[in-house]
Length: 179
Length: 162
Image 1: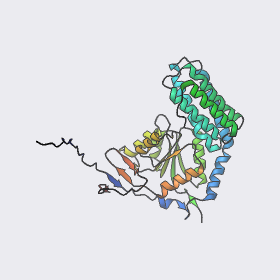
Image 2: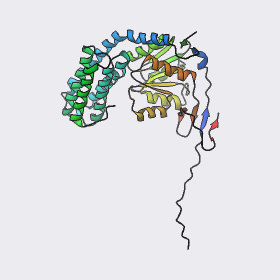
Image 3: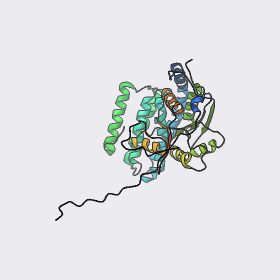
Image 4: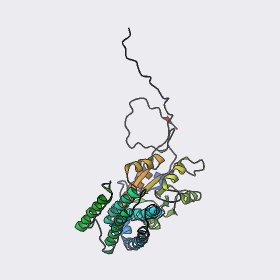
């Protein structure tokens, strides 16, 4: 008698044909570069350009915050699902605020913006009026940071703001990934 | 002489936020870049490529009606694409790993998390322009080689050289 265990059938897929292409390019010739790569003077100049845009940034972000505030007031009159398109619009504004803050030394704007984006992502499919105060406290925090010109990470105050916002989110919808 | 100049490089900047476009254009100008075309979304950018043969594109993800991911897919795979090998740097506030991998699988060269710094932008531009990566065409993918590290193969290399 044959005591051997039955052997499961093995399906051998034919190898996928993979082609490696070296596109013709003259990009290396078009870029002028020093032997050691990064030029600190150039970087300093570029960083200075960004710093020079800071006053404009404050105008842009104040405009963004006004639009966020107007949307929030509309959301606060909603009863649930009717807030969905408004939340999508709010997300777009806050996502831009989050993406710009750190470039202009307003890292706390980026951090609070990230929390608010995460919160909106978590509730956007089933928004409820109990979520509105969380939105409100985040938009208020963003306005406070710009109003008080809290540059950088905001130090101790910034840390307190972030911990407070995280606690508010957790209290309202439970723990979510805010990273 | 110590220098890094984009004077001869044509850059397409695609972002729906005019402020962020201004930031990018200003930083690029500080690096010597003079040939810059701006577009407000992916569809606008595809139109721009028709008359502006960009050497590299800086593309935001979150845009409407066509986002940066769809723009990348069209550039890579459409028969009408003016340059399927166009180096594409995606800039986005979406930094979750699965989204970064999604961008990579669509065929972007580099992924830069917003907020950006001049240093990050310069480093990624240098890497992309000075160390062009080969392209790979497989059953489900066409784009720059996704492997950053050259790991020795255990078996024979079945990839066809073009």
